[in-house]
Structure formats: structure tokens, C-alpha cells
Image 1 (tube, rainbow, N blue to C red):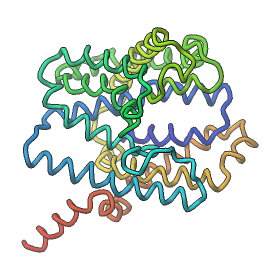
Image 2 (cartoon, rainbow, N blue to C red):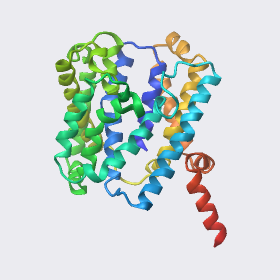
Image 3 (cartoon, rainbow, N blue to C red):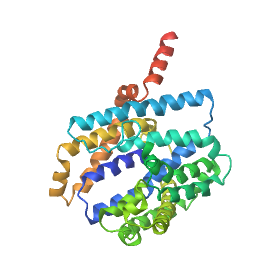
Image 4 (cartoon, helix red, strand yellow):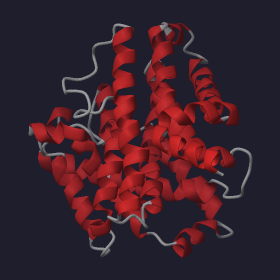
Length: 331
């Protein structure tokens, strides 16, 4: 639940006027939160095989929601006159947060191959670095630029073992993790310098979705910058896993609603954007950042609350919900 809440915060921060502190918080979050989300997805995908039950589950929980929400998000944005949704066709070019579903589908389909040998990890790093040099149209299909860009974190998750993760909960690991996160926050404040990029473009290195030369870097410089971003992301992920408690609480129990929060939060963020929230934030820059973070947390908690989950599950998993209803009636 922690990670998807941070996802909501990250998406909400685009509504806040870009300036020193806000930009630093944004860069800090994006250094590790998507890598952490991808790594956890990889870790939970370790048992995926090309068997009929697993493929059917993948279809019901990833493909069907993608088809539904890709259409819903595009229709929602057009309803409010927002036609700046990319040039690609619906379902082939994922819009905004829907890229993660298409990426998860591709990553899981490749899992039986990627999990065979640890050499997949360095090869995935090479693939990520090389993908940034590509401009071909096919790299936009199903957001392959980003899918391959974040692939190393998924492969790392596949090859992590429970005993290795347990080391992150040693006595001093949380202290070390907290120190690392403080260091990453300070480094985020210097991102423009070490990325050699001016303006808001430097944040886009953290998206893994834009070719190097579109970011003003040569292939060699681009690969070096991305490699450093990958290493910082991996460091940040381990630090977060060391800091976040693993005990069961009311908050962690909401983690079962991760997909609901992820798929629905975008409608809230876009709606307040269309209502003029960025203008309000610009006029109240001194505290808009904290208000935005608080509202994002509130949205995540609202969407993960049991009454809301009970209603929205049908939209996220219509096939599974129907099957469960039929089984309940047959008892």
C-alpha cells in the first residue's frame, strides 16, 4: 500500500508549480518509487508460467482492465476537452498510467525465460541502455521505451530470494536505509548538474520513456546518465524496503486494493487539474506542495477503503467478480 500511495503522490505533484523544493521532492520520489513498484511486481511474478491457469489469470487481471481503463481514461480526458493524449491509437499506445499494465503483461510473458539464469539481469541492463538510443516507431507501441527501460528492476525482483530480502530487516538496516534516502533527497536537489540537463527536462530522465537525443544527450552520454539513474534507483529501492515496516497493520492490509488505487486515482488527479488546481497551487506556492501530498494520500486511502473496494472491484476485475458471484450462488 505504501508504494501505490507514493505513486498517487508522484502523479499529483505534476499539478504543483515547478520550483526548487517541489522539483526536488518530485525528483526524489521518481528516483525510486517506480523502480520499487517494478521490483515488487517482479518478485510477485516469480511463479508465473505459461500454463493455462496462469495465462487466464493474466488475461483477467491485466489485459481486461487495460482494455477497459484505456478506453475510460481517453474518454474521460476528451470529455473535458483534453485532446493532448499522444499521437498513438488507443490500446496500442497506452495513455498516462496505463503503460504499467501493458508493461506488466509483457514482463510476465517473458518471465519463464528471464528467470532461468541470473545472466538475465546484466543483459536487461544492456537492453535498457540501448533502448534509449532508439527512435523507431515500434518503440512507442505498448510503451516499449519505458517497458524495456525499467526491465532491470523487474528482473532483479525475479531473482531476489526471501532470505536476501530478510537481510534488509537486520538491526541496523533501517538506519542505513534512512541515511541513504536522505542522501538521495540531497542528490535530487543537484539533479540538473549531474544529469547535465537544464530546465524541467532533467526530470524526464527518470521516466525512461524518451530517447537520449530528445533529452539533449549523445548516445554515449545518455547511456552513462541512464546507468547512474538505474544504480540510484536500485539503491533507493533497497533503502525503502529496509525502512518500510513489514508488520501487518490496517494500512498494509489495504494493499490488496493496489490495482484499484492505481487505476482510479488518475481520474481524481485529472479532474482537479481541469478544475484549475495548478493555478491555485501557483498562487499558494508556500504550502501547495504539502496540501497536494495530503490530498493524494487521502485519495489513496479513500480508494483502498473496504466499502469503495467492494464497489470498484467489479470494474477492475469484471470476469473474476462474475466467477466469484456464480460460485457463491452455487453453494
